[in-house]
Structures are given as structure tokens and as C-alpha cells.
Image 1 (cartoon, rainbow, N blue to C red):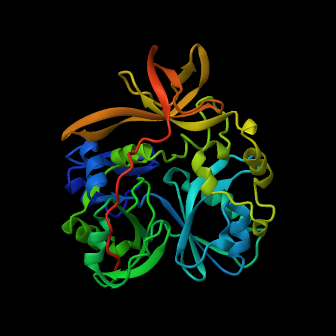
Image 2: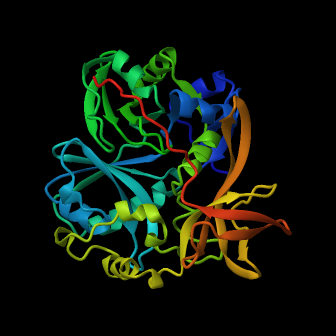
Image 3: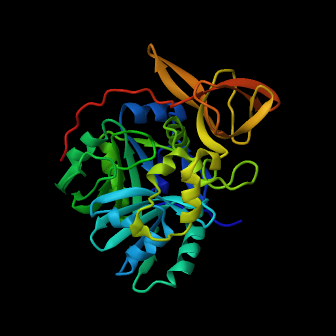
Length: 386
């Protein structure tokens, strides 16, 4: 058995009483002493602090960087100005996803690509094989050198504003970036995240300074959050997870990239991208819903039970797809905490919001209804900007 990797924050997690589990080859916190439901609510009400250093971080430099990234990524790299980032996908020639990723441009001549932890080695080998055909582009794996934290939730901005020595927060727009100093250390800050929170940040700092930044954030009111709540939060926000809503479906078939609604933000057909990998297949997917027999939809479970990945969904007696992710999410009603079952499913594209489904959960049918989203709309308070 291969030895599990540990992030620089591992001992902090253990000291806080975290339940540690294997995830993508890493030993990571599933939850802390308060549990997943409380951590979920703490993020929605305050500021949740996530160790996401298990993610892969590849840095690209050199004159050939833009042509290379335009070829291997689905979004338009030429449109990415300094201090901006965007969601993008590593597509294959068939229009399926090798991985979904985020590309950051903190500096003029450097791009940072964050990939999923379980795909880091696969992505590295794939990109290294293609990069041989491009001149003057350098690719380095800095996953071990750069620590990565996520600070998510409505009070996150207040916390960061109080602890920044110099520099500033990114402008109050999704995907904006900035460079700042905290306790004298250089920190790159992005308005990005995986929770659905409108106030969200991801921080990049040299590994040797990571523990200090973690301690400062906790001291100033952040709450440590594990992988369990990270998953319930992303599901409540209808965000895809590679291996569930992207990649291979429960039948072993490749999921077309445009079957996932969020992909519309990750794919560009700009002429500047020329003939990038997968373009022909993606144009076909995008041209008509008929080319997407099934798409990812949100389903609220009405009966008792939790629908998990692989459960079949029926409309009357016809199988109309599969559940790709499912969980219980907490919510507060009249100051009483309740748990609601929700799921995402790869379902026949002719289905619509309001349709009632029957989901097979271990031989028992439970009702569900297709909905547009799970998160209630809420008024966002104005936040200060440093």
C-alpha cells in the first residue's frame, strides 16, 4: 500500500480533533469535532477555512505558454488579463473531460493551473506529453511548494481585511485576483471557491508560511471545515465533482462536457483558440440539445432516504438516468436544524423542472422532483474592500 501524502496542515487537523480519511492519495480531514452539518452551517453563516493543499498546482512560464494552454484547455487563455482567473477544462478529442480545473494569472508572465488531487499525476503526464510539440514553454509542478487554503462565507472579507498588512483584496468580482502581505508574507488571493458562496477566497502562500497564515485566520474567527462539508456545500450549490458529474458515468460511459450546465462558463469557441483539442466534438455538443441525450439536473428528494451515486432514476416505469451525487444538507427553519436529501443526476435531456421521479435506493423507490437549484436566494450585505 502506498503511503498517503500529508499537507503542511496535517498536524493542525489532528490537534483540532479531525477525523482523518484517505482522499485522492492524501490523508485529509473529513470533519472536526462539531460535525459536518455544523461545519456546513458555519460556512453559510460565517467563514469556513478549508485546507485544499491536496489539489495539484502547475505553473507555466515562457513565450510559448499561451499557444500551449490555448491548445490543451477549453477556455480562452488570451482573454485572461493579469489579476483574473477562470474555470476551464482539460478536454479530450471526444469532448469528454480529462479534468476540470481553474487557471489563475497573478503575474504578467506566469499562469497557475489548479487541478484535482486525484488527477494530478494523470494530468501532469498528459500535459507533459503534449508540451513537447511547443517551443519556449516551461511547466513545473509546485504542488509541494505552494500551500493553498480556501476561506468561504459572508464574514470572510472582514477577516481578511483585518489581517492584510499591505496590498489589497481582489476587486469585488468573481474570479478577480490580488497580491497582498499577511504578517509580512506574500499571499496571492483569489475570489474563487467551491461552496457557492458569493463572498469567497482562495489563498496561495509558500509552504513554509502556510501554518502561520492558518493560525492567523483561525485566531481571527475562521472555522476549520473538512471534506464532508466541502462536499455538502458544493452539492447544495449544484457544483460538479470530477468522477461524478464529469468524467465517466455510472454505466461506464464518458459524460459529454456540455452535459454539465456549468461547462458553459468553461468553454470558448473564440477564433483565437484555433483548433484546440476537442473543439469539433464540443461544437457538436453545443449546437443542439439533441446531441446531449442526458444532462446533469438537480433533484430534491421527497421521500425518506438518501440517493447516492449509481441509483437509477425512473419516470413511471422508464429508466431516465442515474444519480451522480447525493447527500443530506442541513438548513435552519424557525431556529430548528433540519436535514434535507438532495442529489444531482445525469437524466434524459427532455425532462424538465417540476417532473416527478422515482429513485431506486437499494430496491426501494423514493420520490424526487427536478428543481432549478437548492440554495435559497438571500440578500448579500455590502462588504468592505481593503
